Length: 38
Image 1 (cartoon, rainbow, N blue to C red):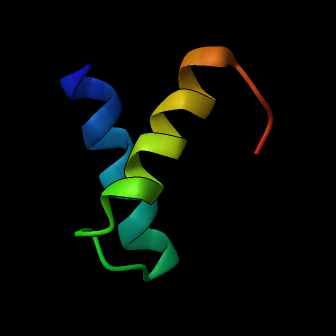
Image 2: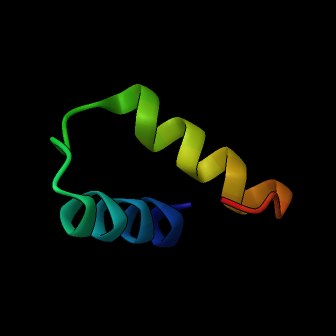
Image 3: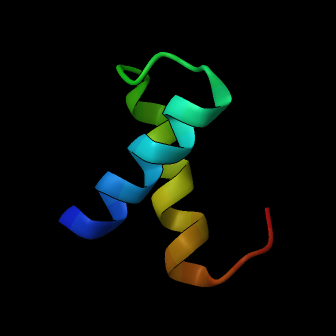
């Protein structure tokens, strides 16, 4: 899971979003885990 969190944080950084938005990170992790397209 830490790998997914790091990946999500990288995405947040590239997108310019605040990394403190836990809801976005959780949604990103769910998306990665389920294989849903962005």
